[in-house]
Image (cartoon, rainbow over all chains, first blue to last red; front, side, top):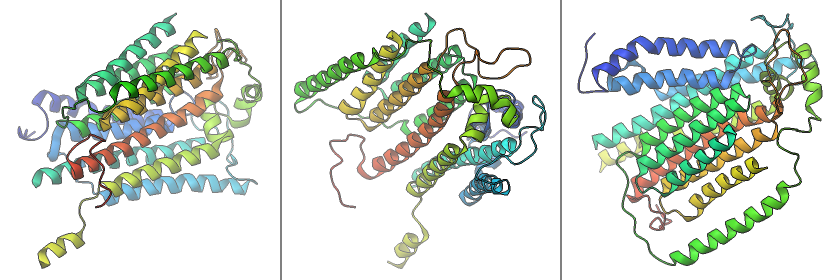
Length: 149
Length: 178
Length: 112
């Protein structure tokens, strides 16, 4: 692949990033989905997903396609995550009270068990991950406009 | 025994982080304190917290370093420096004395009074179906607190986007009108 | 008992950094140290000697776990601390753009 030596870091960092950034994203998704069986949960998994995207921008500089995501799209995705969490909470009204765990709880130690907890994990990870990535984008876009002046 | 050594290392790294004149070195000192905290969470049998503390520490360091690179200035000592330092140290000494008197009333380290938690431990897995009890507590028994935390994170992201905004279109139009 | 006291000494070091330093970034570093020490204090309250991690396994007894409620509260607190630190850093960047310095004794003009 083409290596532009003016943006980003050196060639060694770019090669290692190409090999490992997909694995980091996959590891984050694994920690989110198995939140009710092993340590982790929505918050740690969401931060790991945000870290994989930050890793791409730090290694490749302006060339990375991920840095072209506008702030509108990022804030829309984060609001979608918050609305998903609220809708899971309101779904508890079907059972009688706010935040009640209404789905069927299967046998323990299985992946499809424990009611609404996996949906809450996915909603929280989407919100936290995209929100922290939007913070990082805001910091580097400001640095970019300052240098142009 | 290992906890005492870790806490002494954290105190030493915190003193280095606050007193050093270079900004980059003090940020690295805070990173050392956070990493030792992650090890302390592992020794205290809390794996959820260790994972979360490690990744949050890395992201916090990236934000701090990105914001303060090439920006430090030399500072000079002025004003009533001796009086201010002595009064702060006297305040800290009084605080530690009363804290020592209060800490004598607490239960000994290692035997907590687990009054509330007995019900969660016995019926947690049966009532929620989740094996990880910490996830069951924050997403089923006490899910309202998680809603409050999601609101606080949302507010902080909105605040950052509002503070770090580029000058909008109106200002550029005004400059072109002049 | 000495563990609780060492935690409070770490809190006092952070408090000294907030009260007596003039560089804005050093104040934010002191606030971060205060947050770390208080999270550690909370988790130290719930430790049981020779306990297990609060995750159920297939063939072990239940009542020997450490206390999971302080761990749930501290999990929330860690992520909120990150949000607060990020907001403080963004305000500090804006102050540097307007005044040209991080020194708090020179940031006195209230207009504009």
